[in-house]
Length: 441
Image (cartoon, rainbow, N blue to C red):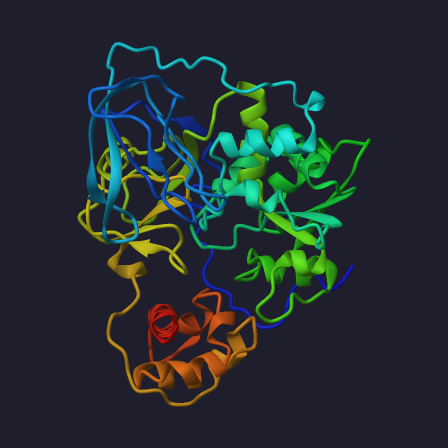
């Protein structure tokens, strides 16, 4: 094996002790759920219900609009109250379907997919995954059926499962592997059949020994799948970094894992694929870590998609008086939230409530050209140069300096002693550069 790590990166405090040993429990159903039509990468879904319609848990309420899109399903039995703009985790308002949950329903759902997956062809399996609305649960929410449909000229040879969960605080994947290892392995089988690959590798950071042991003790013997403890370092869970770590291969600039014959999938997503065929239910709930030093009772919860942030926090005892910031996702790449009505989506890995002692200072200082950002960048960019160009609005020059290779992982911002928000500058610059290109076209 290569060195089980990659060059550069950073070592932020892990802060996982709050929930790493807390067993997963189910959150009671809220009074209403808010289901955004955009909970995935690609085009938003298109509603197929109207106000006043009664829906059952698991019913499709919005259809995928194209190949890179994903359907949305009702996460609870109830009545469609509204289809209108609603606060979205992205920070703006986006169309969403609001369902008033039936307080008298047992919230049981009828079977909607064929559980006997062994009898399905590869095409039928992929179609079932798409119909179930499965997307990547690691945060990016990329539609899984797209990954399972590689171009004919890029046939994958290896499936890599990402169990790194390198973001501080988050323990969603950790608890999934520790508590449901058999489900992870079933998902591996299904994905291997979909992709036509004969080898799978599971990369897990060494700070999760119970998860590693659970996966190894349940390893199937009839397929080639192996578990690999990897170095604890951020961003170990990035696709390109994990491929480098496990295979010693580099994804080319501007390329995708498929370009080197690899498909990378988050372990929670793989377990969800298994659950789809085990239960017949689409993706209507997910495990969310609610944590941080600003929440009263940190927990790992099975949450219906569309649950409001306020309800989730109340279920964990509420927030402390010392709380200063709430983030969806981890503190390195997560999105700060300003509205307690914002809903949990398919891509919400965690809710982190920070207090003043664990929040980053807001004031920035001039760049001292120390080079720490260069030493931390895992894709070997020059963040100092890119930051200077971003402040000057010189986006074409940023493109020449490989701005689009930036993963927005936040390593440069973390390493910067002047507290310059480099990652935020690059995110804004990417959007501005795309607008310039569209205008030029």
